[in-house]
Image (cartoon, rainbow, N blue to C red; front, side, top):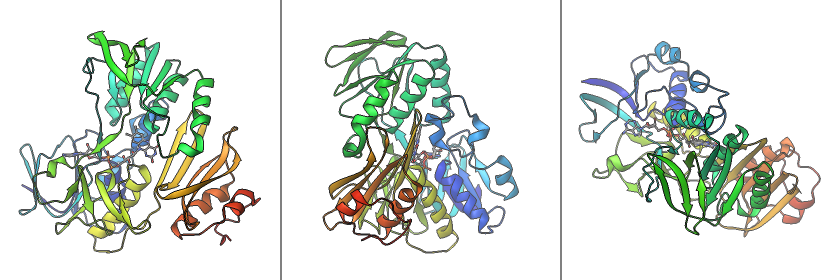
Length: 409
Ligand SMILES: Cc1cc2nc3c(=O)[nH]c(=O)nc-3n(C[C@H](O)[C@H](O)[C@H](O)COP(=O)(O)OP(=O)(O)OC[C@H]3O[C@@H](n4cnc5c(N)ncnc54)[C@H](O)[C@@H]3O)c2cc1C
């Protein structure tokens, strides 16, 4: 039996950044073990729908830490090791023939893509995008594909579509509502749809898939309205499900597959923490539970949880943050739009140089979207959200400049 002071269950983004903090805080060799179902050391997952998918980066480029980092710091990483059972009373993980004992456990099992359950959805060349192998396969198929259908209008679908179209594949995007769904609706739906169309992407919003047809490989996508599209490749980005099912019959508290943690990232069980996409944490900022599936959250929670493993008890205070790159546009988003009753725009939406600011009833800034705007807007957005800054819509709309981090009227 293997035995460690600290074990991280899951070898993704959270684990990679937790390990860094662990090492920085002077942990001793042999104190930490990462147990991962994947065959690759923790890597930057966002690259899978950007540089890695485009063939601009390879495996070594996207590793969070070099292999030597784990060796030099005495951090054990068990790859290709899927944990099938956790005994919280005995403090043991079970993975095949492996039994791994821990004193403290950090669960960072992330999330997995929702899959389609439609006639023909088991045909080859229908892909989901979560792991390095998925991106590799999509890339290989894209090299010999003329046409692709991307299902889903959220960030994975948008990014995959932009890479495939840029690689010379003719892309059709299909999704039930509008791009980005409810979240960014006010800000930029029209801009993005137009931007994609101008670059040759066919966009079919308000559509759903009825079935896939083909002989072994997918050949046609049939929509519910009866449209039949010839395809070589399908990529579906239709959301994810937190990987908490492993604990469904345990005493660990879950909500819809996510592990419930308090404001410190502690679960309801002693010596068990959870971080990253698998959690629903109590936000001190919004005073409600938040479930976030983004890079910055995984990084910050991983770092925070590592400190907690080493005995530093602090509440996790964080402004949710998200970035994305599509074609030659890069944008960032902070906060949470729920509860907003006014959206103020600055700049030129039609030219893709703008920011959008969501204000609550009391004028408090709740969320902000920034694309191609002065640096000070990027600086102010998280600062004002974090500090609960009330802003006048008029001032926000008309003020020529913000002085970074200044107290706004
Ligand atoms: C293609 C793609 C693009 C993205 N782009 C962006 C972006 O542009 N901006 C942004 O903010 N966010 C982006 N994200 C989201 C971001 O990558 C995730 O929020 C982040 O990876 C979450 O980290 P995590 O450690 O919680 O989960 P993961 O990184 O998914 O890691 C979970 C790990 O746990 C392992 N695991 C699960 N179950 C078990 C088990 N039973 N036993 C052992 N190991 C197990 C998994 O194999 C995996 O290694 C993107 C995600 C994807 C998939």
